Length: 237
Image 1 (cartoon, rainbow, N blue to C red):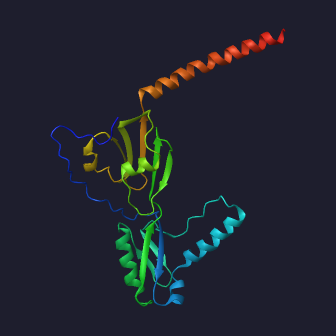
Image 2 (cartoon, rainbow, N blue to C red):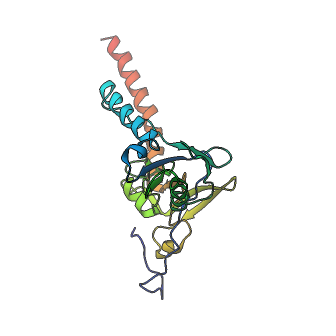
Image 3 (cartoon, helix red, strand yellow):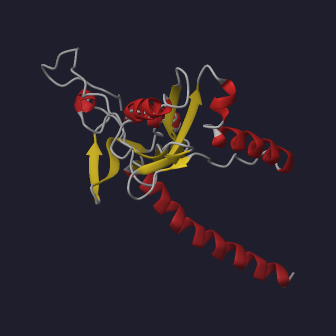
């Protein structure tokens, strides 16, 4: 089944839904890197960078296949992070760009011409169901679309329903369950075209996959019974 099919009288140019900019929330972990003209003073504001470097080297010696631990500034329940010397900074409901500018203004008291890079390490999306590689995707650039997520998971298998992809989203303490038809071009206008942090994408299996599973569930007991019968006969010969 083809993706992005045009509907009758539909034009070849569509107006996209506005780009999504995630907002920082309590419980997020922010990676913050500071630079300035004074390298020695800058190091004081990058404690997690040095710690992560040492931790990664020690883990590589202990177990080359192990993943590095997550380090950064945890946003507390009140929406604040705490930086050396500066103290608490409110970042709740800010984008990474807005948080960067707020931190940079505070750093001007201590550093000459500081630059700040802020990344939210909690931007993850789960892709499950009838895809080639079900995955938990970590999105470092804080921007991913539904087609991109499916592509990173190896695309929908031949058994998956492209016309009924479920996106599960939690907002304001409520779960939203929305079905997306990937075969229609108006997907690009959907508010679910851009995925949000912690979204779950589930590709429903088609009838062919369900029928195959049913046949296997019926066949396995018959095969086991036949093998048991053969083993009993062999005992007497």
